Amino acid sequence: MTTRAVSKLLCKAALIASLVFSGLAPALALTPEEQKSLADVNTYFNSIKTMHGDFIQFGPTGEQTEGKFYLARPGKVRFYYNPPAQLDIIADGKSVSVKDRKLATQDIWPLNKTPLRFLLADNIDLQKDANVTNVLVEPDLITVTIEDKTTFNSGILTLIFDASDYKLKQWTVTDAQGYDTSVAIYNVVSNGPTNPDLFQIDYLANARQNRK
Image 1 (tube, rainbow, N blue to C red):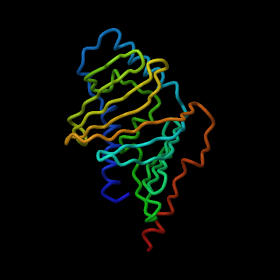
Image 2 (cartoon, helix red, strand yellow; image 1 turned 60 degrees about the horizontal axis):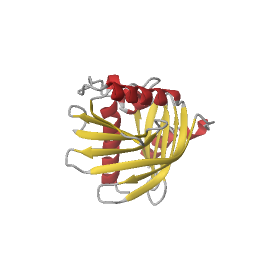
Image 3 (cartoon, one colour; image 1 turned 45 degrees about the horizontal axis):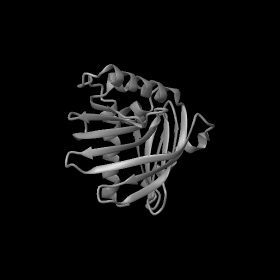
C-alpha cells in the first residue's frame, strides 16, 4: 500500500468517525418506525464492549484489502491489514498509532485529538449525534445515510445493519468526488475475551526511528 493510499485511507477513517459523531443535530424528521430502528441500533452498539472479526475493504477502483479487527470499548481498537498491505492501526486508550510494517515507520497521535475517540466512547447515540439524512427500513436490512459538510472532508456515510439483530454488516463512504470505499465485516464475535497485548503501542519505536 503506497503512502498516498494510506493517507486516503486515514482520511476516510477520520471521515467515518467525524460523520457519525460530529455532534450535529439530525437533519431528518424521522417516522416512529425509523426512530425505533435507530434506537434499536443504538442499543445494540452500546451492548458491545468487545468485538473481533474479519473485514474486507473495496476501494473506488475495485481494489480489495483484507484484515482483522479487534475492539475493546472504551478506547481500544486495532485494524491489522493482511499482506500485501502492511498497515497496522492501534488505539490503546490514550494514543493512536499508524504503523507501516514494511517501512518500519510509525506515527502517533493523542486519541482525544482524533475522531476515533467518538467511535470508542462509552455511549453512542446515532439519533442524537449524527446528521442523518435517510433511514430505509426493509425486511432484512436497515440502511442509515449520514451526511457531513463541515468536518474534515464533505462526504456521505451509508451504514447497513441486519434488520433481525441490528448488527452492523457494512459501511460505505462516498467522498466529495463521488468515489466509494466499502468495508464489510464478517466472522464477528461480540463480548468475547480479548488479549490486552493487541492494543499495546511500541512508543520506543519512534525513538529508534528518529535515531536512524
